[in-house]
Image 1 (tube, rainbow, N blue to C red):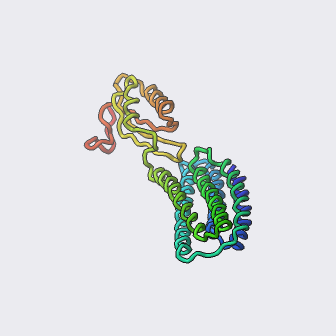
Image 2 (cartoon, one colour):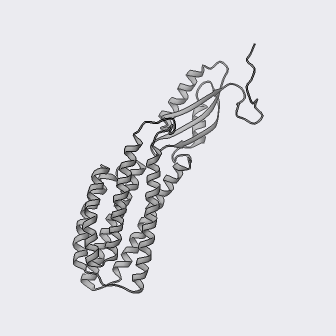
Image 3 (spheres, rainbow, N blue to C red):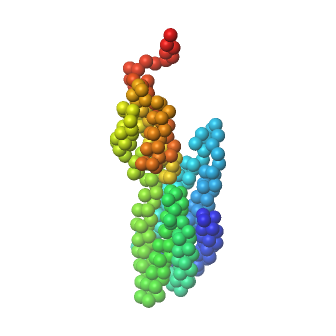
Length: 287
């Protein structure tokens, strides 16, 4: 999926670059830059997904899953950089409008719209954050193609040169909003924030309903990727509770109720050894 989208976008980018040079269109030129960024994003996303399938080792005990999130974060930052460049160029052209050749812009942008529609349909239904980031780039291209078509028609029908920079600014406004969402989501994962949709208080409440589980504390929830939440916790159980049975029931609730497939559960009786004031260092074995 990502490989096909990459080949499609990269191939058309060269055609659009020629069209932008011939027509002197800022909107089309911005779309060329966006196409280049999209090709890079799609290629990086594809590489990241392949890399994430590698097994873990002693140096990367969780494997390469986070590489996908890192790629999404970098792509979002790059998109902000592109938006800044378009903004500066658009402001300059609002002060001193430049002529564009509308017919080449119209032809290239129409083909670009079709290409981006095909690529976007390949990507937009995925729940994977990295693929969503790549789809956002393609959506930006799609909007850029629409803006280029509109600017070409405005110049062709009315001779209005301001259409090109104004529509470029509109694309920037839409892209910044989407880029911020990807940057925020990727940043939350990289900072190991609690995944959206998981309420730690609800986790505690659900687990303390399990027979024999008296208290849940030291709950930590994070995610390797947007689809891989993980959890560690301490569970204090009653003296007559079987530890293995308690762990199995806790894990079952986490999996079925909260969608957490990977969890680490520390079972305790009495005081938590990690609490302040708890005995530290090796303890004597009972006689």
